[in-house]
Amino acid sequence: MKTIRFGIIGGGLMGREFASAAARWCHLPKMDVRPEIVAVCDKNPALFEWYQNHFPSVKQTTDDYRALLANENVDAVYIAVPHNLHREVYCAAIDAGKHLMGEKPFGIDLPANETILATAARHKDVFVRCCSQMPFLPGVQHIGKIIESGELGQVIEVETGFLHSSDMNADKPINWKRMVEINGRYGVLGDLGMHACHVPFRAGWRPRNVRAILSNIVKQRPDGKGKLVPCETWDNGTLLCETLDPATGETFPWTFKAFRIAPGEKNTWYVKILGTKTSVRWSTKNPKRLEVLRYDGGEQTWGRIDVGVDTAFESITGGIFELGFSDAVQQMWAGYVYELVHGQPKSKFAGCVTPAEANLSHKLFTAALESNENHSTVNL
Ligand SMILES: NC(=O)c1ccc[n+]([C@@H]2O[C@H](COP(=O)([O-])OP(=O)(O)OC[C@H]3O[C@@H](n4cnc5c(N)ncnc54)[C@H](O)[C@@H]3O)[C@@H](O)[C@H]2O)c1
Image (cartoon, rainbow, N blue to C red):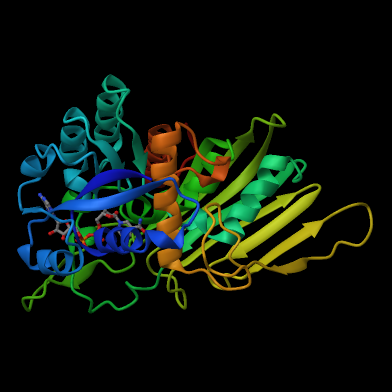
């Protein structure tokens, strides 16, 4: 079993998910490579105790990411810091020769993203990917196989999205994700958008143009100190893209939604694809249920499949059981270390988002900002 020694920079929510996934690697009995957490960096030292209590392998805790990058016992880093720090910290990690799993949006804006890509291009021996775990859920893996097999026929229409309702409460104090200078001008697109792009981009579908409507619904929020302050980020974004499927040479409409204010939705990631031969739909709302319609000239009937633990990377859990968010995170990390060691993903949809795919999302979101501002359709 090969071991990849990881440092975590930004040990908050997602850093702990990664560490927890690494701690139960015995769950994936067929893996020939495993991650080990050896160093943690965060500006908030209160986070270190959890790592130190649960991971004897953690030998370094620091508030200085440069000290972590100088650690020769670190092979790879997971960086989950606010968006305004992506360019600086990702580039420093790549320059230090550390393999990188970066968080979305992979740069606060297109120039930051292109600097990260240029740095990666100078270090071809460094493996660089962007975090996005939802497609590792079995329903989506199943859809990936249908896309790959060509069973869809000609794509008629695609809808993808990620819907939250955590910002419904206008009394929720502002945090960095609602501040343009730290989260970026993309607002919700930078925060949730990559999740909605992953499957279409991995399928090879390419948006040619976009008409976007972005909404700032809650324009002021409490600052947590008794005052109301401006909240200028986009809460919700709807994008309609004319999208090319290179497999058929035909275009189709792709509707993309990233909402922070979606009444009734907690963490709803969904995909719906209509094809001339096969149509599919799936959502985290009902994660076991995959719906498929196969058209052979007869009745058009949506069938329902209960998907169990049919994962890209075999697990010890029985096939009839259910998967959850933390399992998807573990599967994604299996995808990362597998591709790092084997040089290619185990299958097309079992690979993490590439820098080129992250760059495409930036081009789309930058065009979306222009479209929204000018009320126009913008070519990519
Ligand atoms: N993949 C997902 O589903 C998912 C979910 C949430 C967030 N994210 C992404 O993860 C990243 C972090 O978001 P979060 O929700 O974890 O935010 P967070 O605020 O919970 O965590 C960020 C951490 O970075 C630390 N930090 C800030 N500046 C630092 C510095 N200079 N050096 C070291 N540490 C520093 C903070 O102290 C904090 O602990 C963002 O890019 C976000 O878009 C991804």
